[in-house]
Length: 307
Image 1 (tube, rainbow, N blue to C red):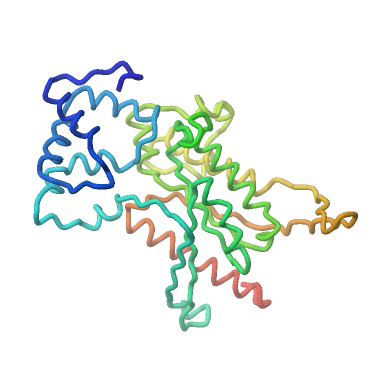
Image 2 (cartoon, rainbow, N blue to C red):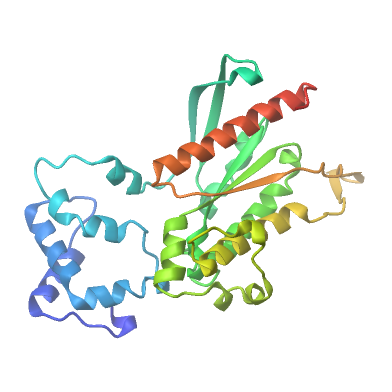
């Protein structure tokens, strides 16, 4: 709070702050006393002022969701709802493999298709492990936090988080190990993006000046939806589409000292972008059905069946 020059409004809140700061996270049980201090701090006007400036420091998106529900969470018989679970966050470490079967529509042959999904961590320290699952991958689902256009990367505190996502996407898109792989980009957290643009009045051009020259296309307009929000989300989508359209010249790759080979030219590919809200199960269900159909079509095309 000190860097923001904001103070707590009461002595009791100051005591609660000290209680929280003294907690040993490795040896802690969630007691009634903890919840009482948490509730008091969340009701403090000073904490609310700090929260209103959350773009200036790292803070998970579900903070207010759970703090607004601390009365429910603190109950002994608390049972998480579906939305509670969807709003919870757990950092992905290592590579997680998820296997499941999905029915294939009759028009594509019927039966069932087994999906192998590999969940990889997005943090810089985790990216070196990605190459372990690149071999044989048929499609990449690239998840982007579209609402982070005004945030900085936690690791260095200076790099714009959305720009970093674009840069990472560029490196993956042009990877020689994925040159025949389909890409699907999920521009996630649309609910938070809309809140920032419509309710908080934040503007992406303060971080991406080229936005001033971007025009919303007629096909991207939605009846009764805020035009500034639509323009913002479509601008972000265009940043990723630009990467997929860029032509990269072939470069020499050193095989052994004195022996080099030219990289094969990239095969033209489509990049499918979807606006998603992970906490909206209906939205995710519809999007995943589209993804399912895309993967089936890619599989059929690889064996020579064109639809």
